[in-house]
Image 1 (cartoon, rainbow, N blue to C red):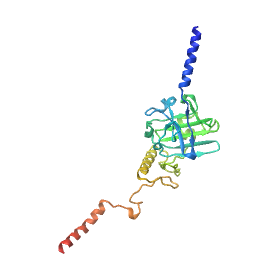
Image 2 (spheres, helix red, strand yellow):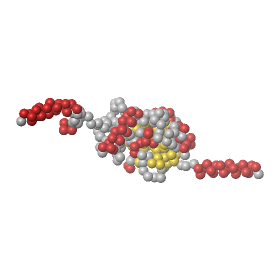
Image 3 (cartoon, one colour):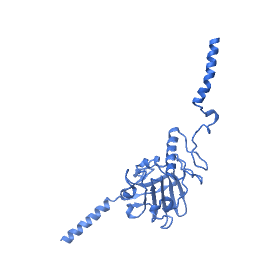
Image 4 (tube, rainbow, N blue to C red):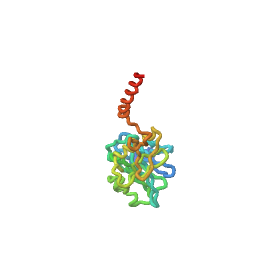
Length: 252
């Protein structure tokens, strides 16, 4: 009887764990600019919270919302063997810790019950300390989706090296920064891009286009002549003229 009761207890625990585990589905849809990422609870270290992380999506699918403010930059790539999305992020938008070295999500059980509908394997990496994020879905196990190099980040595990620096608009993906851009793929670039995106949203201007992918910031040197403002120096220069006009008025 004890054995039977024990067996029943084990079965009950197994059933309870099965129904309490929540499957997390992630996917991307380049055509509709949709991205779903696994994220830890706000304020948690990624490596310590992988099994309790949840899917967040940019579209309404029943998953948690992934706000557009998370993406400092975002772009997609579709090849014959994999599809990926990657870019720079604003970690504060989803409560990530900016000094966190990051972590990897994939189909292994130690990172949760994660699945990618339509794909046998995926790899997602978040790097708050560098401001980078990436996710790739592969048609087969192999080097394209390397799940055994989680400490190497997006560049080491997925061999991603072209990091965009232009801020994304609400309805388009970022332009790839030109090679040799010193700010490309850095935490500073992510912060600058997020700031530029927020400024663009406030002022109503969009992301600049072109090969460099950088957003032009209005300055005295690049404004058209009709739009320049000389500030205090202009007022000082006008002061003598105002004085002469006043004196002339007195003489009249």
